[in-house]
Image (cartoon, rainbow, N blue to C red; front, side, top):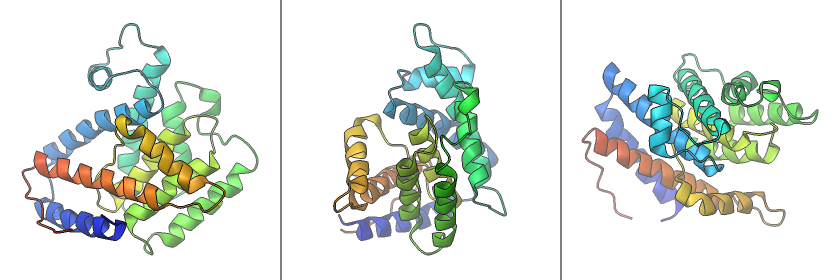
Length: 244
């Protein structure tokens, strides 16, 4: 399926989901908690974190550390969960203000327990200008291109800039989801099993000769559609019948 067709399918499914909204407060709470564990696990696992999804759940919901696991892995999970909570709050704020401060706070919350000195701090003098340019670009394109393509671009460009000493991939995925949630889409978790495809798509977008965002955009769209299907299963929503 081509990207245009996939985006059409996603937007039709989004309409069906919106018919089920607004969710009850308890439903929102349960959904947020579910994806808090899922996104924290998957995003950390992509970077080599050893916690399983069950161990992540126990740590985040019960506050129990896992014996035999590196303490850094636990800090990565608790820090990511704090950044996730902030991401949801900002994404749902009205009025919404997209800014560098938002990005710096996401990283600081995630990285504070690992390296407080470098949490929310750019790594060199060239980065601030590049990040200002990225934020300006995203604000300029906010209503000009499809939100999924915008979110994928934000992720990819953020990784290109690599503004922090560590934690760039996880911050990029939080940033991407912040945009998606603000625009009414579902939280995207990239399954660790898709890590080779994820890295390959990023590398294709970053290569010096004939770079292309096509594979990366498509992978993010596919992950969004999977998240929509999961939402529909959870809330017993009939998926739209679309051909192609």
